[in-house]
Image (cartoon, rainbow, N blue to C red):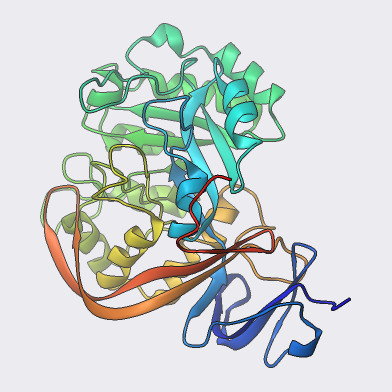
Amino acid sequence: MPPYDLVLANGTVLDPSQRLHAVADVAIADGRVAAVGPALPREEAARVIDVSGKLVTPGLIDLHAHVYWGGTSLGIDPDALSARAGVTTFVDAGSAGAGNIRGFRRHLIERARVRVLPFLNISYAGIFAFSRQLMVGESVDLRLLHVGEAVRAAREHGDLVLGIKVRLGLIAGEGRGIAPLHLALAAAEALGARLMVHTDMPPPTRREVLPLLRPGDILTHAFRPFPNGPTVDPGVTGRVLPELWDARSRGVVIDIGHGMGSFSFESAEACLAAGFLPDVISSDVHALCIDGPAYDLPTTMSKLLVLGMPLDRVIAAATVAPARAIGRPDLGTLRAGAPADVTVLDDRAGTFSFMDVTGRTMHARRRLVPVLTVIGGRPLAAEDGGSG
């Protein structure tokens, strides 16, 4: 029997976890990375795929997605998207709460081909009313934000739940202000867990929220439009909030979370001009933005690349950085022994256009296009999007 099940040959391996950026082969055996290096013995492989001229990266990790398909109105099918998007791990950002995490686990997570890891919503019902015709934020009724139930459910599913998610703002909480954050923090502290925080339109303002976040907590939608964006005032020369710099300095994770309303070129340009790059790039893909403007993780990555974020930093922000943010050092890497999750990307030249959530369009001459996704050693073509 050949010692390698698969060799991805002649690609440009870009693995920020190992500071590796060189032409090399990636060998896979028994669902794990067996070796990475130049000119590995091809005759010992059951299958060889030539990926010359392509980028070979650790499997992409989308830190903010909504994939409770069929169980929530905003959920998309992760298996239908994984190969097309090059994503090997979806982190579900609080679609389910204590009242429906069991169903999420049994009916989707345990059956999915792609890895799905959830944050638990502090709301008992999770995100339950999210469509173009109906929008009721789960933080509107504080009775649903039951700390005890959230702690119980998170402990019951402690092998799976990554932390607590809370959505704040005029849309998610209809003026309930900072109260949902205090309840979510109480649950997270009882669990010794991280917190992911969504902010939309104020109240509360980010200046109220940011000082309360702890090392390891995640601020998502970091580059959303003004107000409650990353700058003191609107405009590409806007000054980045001092509270945002302070949060980063004490270890708060800064995440993109593009979505339907949470990424603007103006905010991104101001932050990048100030040297304030995101730690993590995520799509916040869900039913209302999968057909635009977010589409998927590589599209969001391409937008940051076009805006001037270096390629190595863009890849790191979708691999090793989200793996670190969720405490999974076994993911987001091509180290020998790691799960054989690999994404092959084409850094494609051409004429492309990208749109942000405000409707602004930016034209570009490159974009990242997934051409092959490998999950647990199984290669999937980009057009292989079925759940079967």
